[in-house]
Length: 459
Image (cartoon, rainbow, N blue to C red; front, side):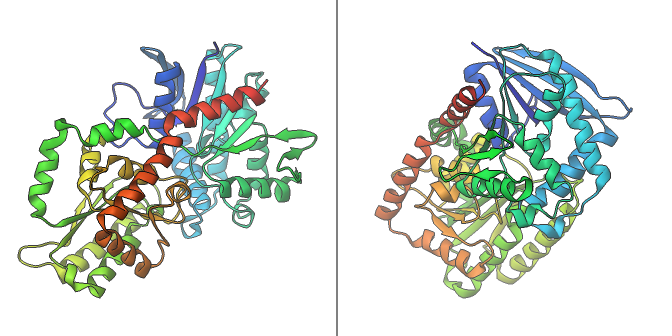
C-alpha cells in the first residue's frame, strides 16, 4: 500500500505542547494516525544563520515526522510576509491589511523550492503526496521540476477569492499556474470551487465545459469540494468527561446561574472579534433586561504577533472591552470575561458544553471548526445554540444554526437573543439535525474522500 506524505507549513511534533492546534493539524493528524506515513514541514524554529537546516526525522508509531528549520530572512519573507501579510488578507477579502511586496514573493518561491529539495530524497515511487494550504501553492511545480512523478493533491483550508479580488495580486497568473500543476485541488465550499474555476477561466484562459469540467491546454484540471470535519464522537465524549469536571464546575459556580455566551478564536482580524464585541454591546443597549443575567466569555489565543495588524486589532479589542465593562458592569456582575490565553482542547469542549450560546462570527472563514466543535460538545438533552457567520464555510452545512451577517451588529445581537430564548424542543431538533450533518462529513470522511479522489485522478 502506498505511503501518505503530508506536507504543511508547520508540523505538530508529538512532544510539542500545542493546546490550540488548529483544524489543519487536527485533520492531518487524524489521517496519519489512521493511515500512517510522513508529515513534512517546519518545526516552528527559526535559524539565525543563512542556511535552511534539515530534515530532522522523528519516528512515533506509524508516523514519521520530518522537519526543516528555515533561516530568519526566508521565514520572515515567506511566512510573515507573503503568506500572512499578502495572501491571508487577500483570500479573506480584507484588503485594508494587504500590502504587496515583491521581495516577500521571492522569499515565498524560494522557501517552496527548499521544501521540494528537502522532501524529494524522502519520497518513494509509490507515495501519494498531500499538500496543505496557501503557504505551499507552488510546491507541486517545484517537485515536478525535480522529477517527482507521484500523485500530488492540494487542499486549501482558507477561502479562495473571486477573480476581481485575486487580480489585485501582481503575481496572480503565476499562482494560478502553480495550482494548475496539482492532480487534485480541494476546497471547503462550493463558492470557493466556483471562484477557482472562474479565476482559471478569466486568469489563464481555461475552458469550463457545460458538465462543470475544467480544461487548460488540453488537460483536465480536477477540483472538488471536500469540507473538513471533526471527530464528533471524540469531542462529545471529551466534553462530557469527568476528567474535566473541575474546570466545568469552577466555571458553573462562577456564573451563579447566569447564562453563558462563549466565543473562542485566534486573535486575528479575520475572526471579527471587535465586531462581535460591538454586537454584544448593542444587545445590552437594546435589551437592558439581560444585564446581570448573562455573561459573555471570549477566549482569544494570541496568534502571529509579528504580523502587521495584530497590534492594531489588540488595541481595538482592549478599547472596546474597557468601554463595555465600564459602562455596563454592576458591583456584582461584569458583562464580559476576556481571556487572552489558550486552553487545552478538552477543557475548551467542557466550557462549550456549559454555554447557552456559541458565537462563531468570523468576517470570513474557510470552514471554522470551532462552530462544529461547539455543536458536537453540547448535551443533546439541553443543547446550547450556535450563532454562525454566513461568511464561514460551516454555515453551508450547519443550516439549522442561527446564521447571521457578522458585519451587522443588530442582526448578531438578535441572533444571540434568539439563541437565549429558543424553546428547548426547538433547540433539541436543531441540534440533532446539525449533529447528523457533522457525522456525515466528519474528519475521517474528509480525508478518505480526498485521498480516494486523488488516487483516482493521479494515475
